[in-house]
Amino acid sequence: MIQKLLIANRGEIACRIIRTARAMGIATVAVYSDADAKALHVRQADEAVHIGPSPAAESYLQGEKIIAAAKETGAEAIHPGYGFLSENAGFAQAVIDAGLIWVGPKPASIEAMGLKDAAKKLMREAGVPVTPGYEGEDQSVERLKSEADKIGYPVLIKAVAGGGGKGMRKVDAPEDFEASLESCRREAKASFGNTQVLLEKWITSPRHIEVQVFGDSHGNVVHLFERDCSLQRRHQKVIEEAPAPGMDEGTREAICAAAVRAAKAVDYEGAGTIEFIADASEGLRADRIFFMEMNTRLQVEHPVTEEITGVDLVEWQLRVASGEALPKRQEELSINGHAIEARLYAEDPAKGFLPSTGRLGHFYLHDEERVDSGVEENDEVSPFYDPMIAKLIVHSDDRDTARLALMRTLSKSFVAPVRTNSGFLYACLASEAFAAAELTTGFIEDAGDDLLPEALPSEAATNRAAKTFLEANWQFNDLPSVVIPSGLQSFRLNAKPNRSVRLETRGQALVGDADSAIGAFRESGPFHTALNDTEVVVSEYGEAFVFSAPPRGDTSGHHHAHDGDIIAPMPGKVIAVLVAEGDAVTAGQRLMVLEAMKMEHALTAPFDGTVRDLSVSAGSQVQVEALLCVVEPKED
Image 1 (cartoon, rainbow, N blue to C red):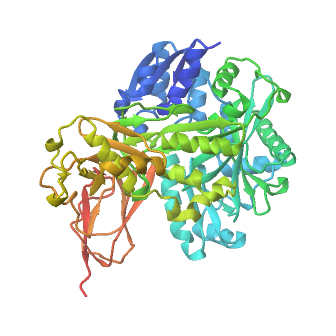
Image 2: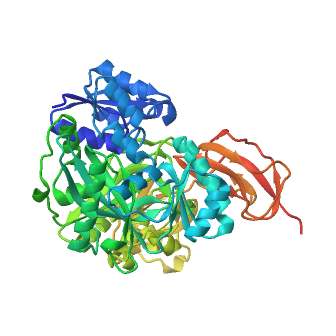
Image 3: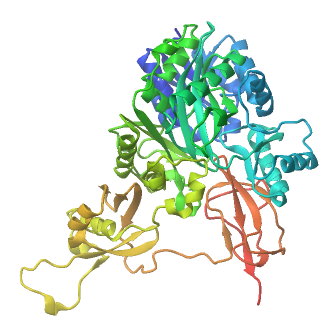
């Protein structure tokens, strides 16, 4: 058995691996960048090695530094986690060549499944059904557009080296194809260094079904049943569950058998996932489920499989990497109950889900159920990496009980002042369509603004905040925002005063009635409050609101930028400037593209006008709220 393990990753997955390694008596080594010097995974590991500056390309993607750290600390093995170098066959081979144990599949298996076009050809040969499309060598715009026309719109453009939702574009009409192709290739080049794409038929009622597979060096391959990952936003999974709702035993047997054939076709060892797209227009049917790709690593959503099978997949990884056979045979594996996982991201749904960075001044995650996180209170959310800060996982006897338990977990949790998607997750789970398991990968897009949480708190939440302020043993007259009622004619000796407090949250001034808080609180559903010297936090159906008393004399609440100011919504890098000083632009026209937290964000003109004060160029690093340019309104 491995005695000392280096984890070539960060955040919640590094913490997750450390937990299992510690339980197995294996010492752990963390690696970290400048931004992660005080990160939780660094604090939890037995040792930690600094590997470079904050950008991942200069630290976590530097394979030679990671191998050097392993040798320096005497680690025998390297676990890549997921993301970064986990599906890099060259890195896997370098680890093996250095005399270290690679906790993952053979480099040849990674390579075989690494390019989606080659993988689809291989799967056809193995008798695994694949989605209709084009995977040819001719990558000219003309040929690709011609093939898209043959397939029929809508089509999906996918980077052959893609993953994690990167390098994917749905195209609804021929006139949009070239712009989508250009955007897809630019993202693919930045993320994977490969601009080659394939085309797939877009399935109109798609569900994303994936099967967990596991192989060992003794020729054994098993499946651990399926997961449903249909709830996605911009091709990124949001909520995952196992088993897949509506999956009958015949269809399960067919899809899981196909997944095992796929794994055996590449002589697979370790944990892997075979991803399928299902045409669910008539429910889940074995003849309407098609292979999409294989992820040759552990998946973010692996906990739901662990919960229904009782298997620790990281323990299996470490045992298989040490040369042991799989701990269980196929007939010893079974499904127990239902599990659902929600990914908690540091992002602001009210601002188009832009990443939210900063210090986690308040961070409480209700932990009656399983929580996998890579941060604690007062940790920093960095702009350099993926914005996921935790996974909330529940397991129960049936799907609806699990769904309600996860809603309770979200309603009793709060994070502030960093914004999260918690209220959005709650709305997804609470929707009638989700409760009825009416799932497709377009679920979130189709629901639109119905899933967005309210921008401001309810009256009940505001009253609760007011009551908490006044019960905090503060002197009534010390609060400049207290509203003293006029109309002294209503004054009665020994009467309880009507106590209203003017509070501020999210740049808005609101008045809370402390005396109405108790009844409203009981009637209006779940809240959670927290208090420090200056703030009250109220969590309403998963959405956290931070209330404070505004400074004396401040009545505006916040400053408004000029309507034509183009402001950086977050720290990041300008990767494309599409206009020049003095250009005439129209409303909605793309002005520039900002990259932050591995995502592209297009900034557009708010109205017709002229570009002025352009202060950035491609490659510029900008801070949040930096003025990038101004659109001067067109004169009537």
